[in-house]
Image (cartoon, rainbow, N blue to C red; front, side, top):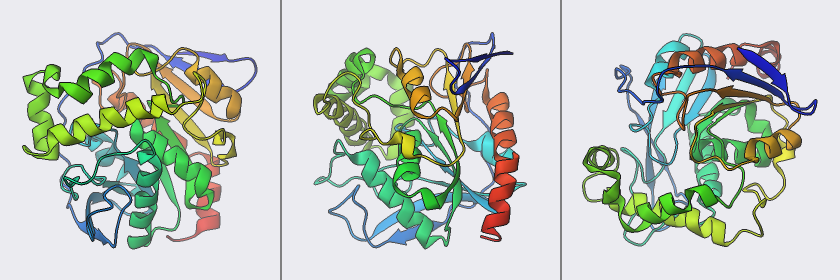
Length: 313
């Protein structure tokens, strides 16, 4: 392990692995899949009410896991739920459009502000589950959503893990990728398309995948410049203890993106995992290490102080 500091700011650590960044199928957690009924959600404004399915394991302070743009089954948190359920009430919902939750209707598409809509939906879900304050761990789009909650509803957040984080609105390195998904999602190959069909439904997967890609392209079009960020210049308002977990080989990361985040959040810790891509928590090379890093982060003294202030949730 190599530890370095960037210009005396955020703490950076680099972990070295030598396995290829392959996401592996993990054993399914033996968890119940209950549902919460929300009166509405801005993600699917034409549908009322909205059904949100969520996995729940363990007892203790709430820990909410927020999946990325390709859904839970593509980058599962199974291993983390299995390890963390001994100390936390672990909740992992399917957002609207995903898994067993309400799917996008013919009238609904994801809009460029879908992350903010998803943050509102997540807060509504927490309200319905009686969760006033929680540890949040978001992956990719889920990390954006968690960070938005950290900015807009700081009283709801005990600490944050932001994995495979997106900061800039413009993603030049990903433009071709999103353009392909927006027009020809089948180009991803038969195996991925079959997994998408299982996650989103055989009739709905193309709509969700293309809608998601188009939304990211629209986010870039609406950008004020290369360094315009998704948080309207307010990410420094995050007050909760924050840990970034990032793969060195993440293809969705722009040059200088993490350095820009470090300048805005100088007290945050950034862990860089070598030979790891866009999903450190589910890739073979890093899944166990990421779980260990996360567990240690949540159990640090600041977490204990949060437990004392929060009492029983």
